[in-house]
Length: 108
Image (cartoon, rainbow, N blue to C red; front, side, top):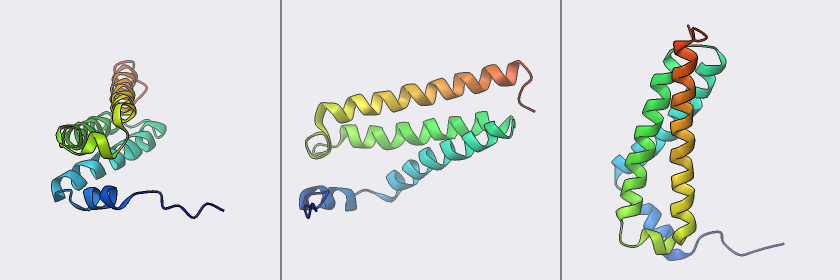
């Protein structure tokens, strides 16, 4: 069994130092994507708005993380930047897909 903690004390201190707006933006990103997926399954046009809110939250929280002096060293280095870019690409694809489904009349 591995008894090693998943985060180091400097990482924990960094996570706890986030301002409230960063946590709110992150929550909008996560839950906007969740609700967007559920609304897409239900074929609702509101899915597009939810995905746009998700992208806005993702961008706001990640801009804070990527411009923070310590963040790149503490959480992931270059791999973290690549992962962030991948998340933005997925969010853009979801918006594009939702818009195509709305334009074709699949979403009501």
